[in-house]
Length: 420
Image (cartoon, rainbow, N blue to C red; front, side, top):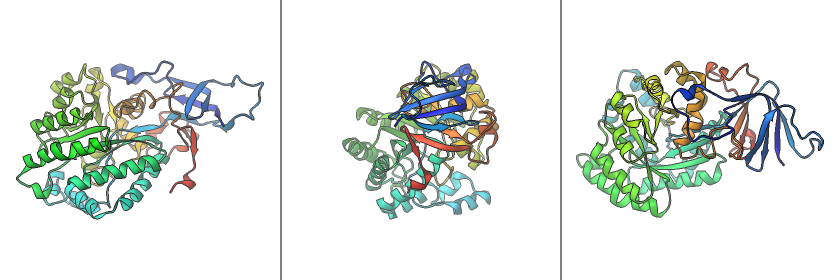
């Protein structure tokens, strides 16, 4: 039965003519409809407008009616960068961080990514699926409707494939839209210490062909940064992935000016992510490209890092996306409402800019903006209805509470009680 939402206080992020992304000064303009209605048929947004709903003669029996008086409708958040398939937590490293150890120092002691790799190796696929489903259900009820999930905690041939097969299972089990990314070059395994080149060759010659053969990933990613993978190694891996039809997404410039942004743009990466170390040269490289600069506020907050220069990026005319980086070591939260708040508090983004960053622009960073990320006719009906709130600026303002009351994904109301 079609769903008709009526008496909506405000429909947020409305597009009459859908765009693939929003950039520069345009990010500060947010179209809304006050006192609106929205009609969903099957899994799509059929129509919307100002009250009253025009089809008054036929009565309301043909619709499932949701009265949203005092409440707002938003498009679901799109989280374009996560590592949410992992085994167990890493709060011991969190304590080490409190004691003053840096991210790199923890990694050198066998913590960080290598710690997660050991735990993942010991976990079964069923255990990983069960843990990840719990996380997916949690972020869903905070308003996320589409999420990218990376491999990268496997590091061995077998365990990377295990991660990607888990992600494939999650796509079948969860109502969320899930985009899989192969991140074989996340860190150098302990077994390849001093032989990084050999590991890169294994990623290129063994992992990538098998991932492609089983159609396990849409994108390929590399951690191109100081202490991880060089520009040359990244270039070789991306080139190999491109030959198998996997478009690039890059971890870049989190720890230093790594050259990751430049190599990402060279390979027409869909996004370059982190970007704490970004200057005029990097901004110039991104201008005119089809690569989405994606900032991960949760990681910078958790690790107390410098903030990426988002204001300079927007003022230069760039689009900006924001994602959670949900992972056990540096951003153990997938709450995109909190990311929205950090965008305003730490990066001085206007609420309008921040909303674009976590919806249409982050949808673009997943290759999904033609069907997700805004309220537009014909797009997938992924949206949420808030609790009663005074304005859309209240969403980033009230950072400590869940403002989502009703979740609709693929045109269906999600009942939290029915989730596993």
